[in-house]
Image (cartoon, helix red, strand yellow):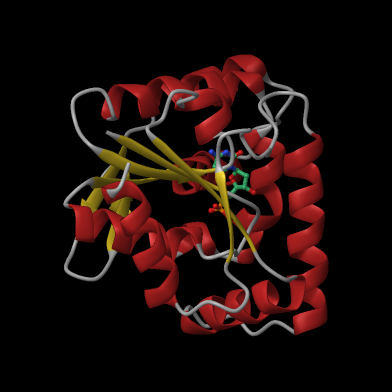
Length: 218
Ligand code: DC
């Protein structure tokens, strides 16, 4: 079974997807982390986004692995634990441009489909219910108020030692959403058959219970 969870930045996708997967005993896939890994590699190797050949080489040499711990997800890029590094502002500010490249998307989508081929998965991203798994069994599209999203992001960043103001974060989150929604290749978009969940006033438990019930009653 495939459960797709899409939506703009900081709407609670990761937190709820992780818990929904845990409750259902499904594999959890964070596709944003995959795009963040390639962005980190692009930055480290000073690769120009116009250099298709260099990008191709980089993509081919990349090995992304997820490891579940009791309460977290460790992201490994060529064996290195990059879980914190990929959440740093420098990666965040470049990830939309990198993930808009068809060359990058085609590769990532192939990996995502391969991972989900023989197992039940909860997959979060931007294009899961529309492009990657248009026939997903259950689709959710999470939304939330801008200020609430910025507050959540501020807490996430504080936990990794980054201090940001709410105004900066509202601006950054909205700019990234605009870019992700307006790109020509698989833009962020609600699938017609996705259930919209506004998480602004919901606790984590409430949103997870709602989603798990919806999947169980499918
Ligand atoms: O969910 P996130 O904030 O970690 O995602 C980082 C970026 O990756 C997001 O701004 C757009 C891109 N992304 C994408 O284009 N397609 C996905 N399926 C997941 C993420």
